[in-house]
Image (cartoon, rainbow, N blue to C red):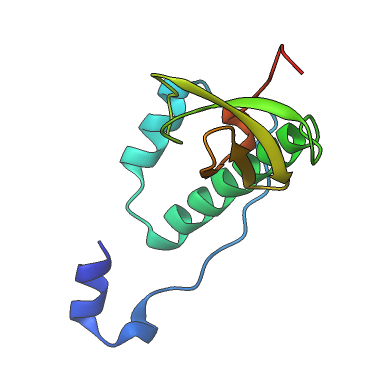
Length: 122
């Protein structure tokens, strides 16, 4: 889509992001995927991406409130969704939209707070 726009002219040919009010009710996952796949308007796609990003950021900020600096947590070895595999224990160094954890093995883990869990062992 972006390539087609650039073929028509310079970078300025790409429309600026539009503004869109929030939905009255959330869409189901299937409805959301259908909306993204059906979107051929680049500005609207930018709005969707920005809106989704803001919601994810809000969730991560809320999640970070559960993990103050110094809290004992476990995190997945690989900071990716969905979390899988081994969980590693450590201590929260920095909290925010990205959590930084000093692991018990001496390494540093960085990732979204929503992947962390409070440790049962203090």
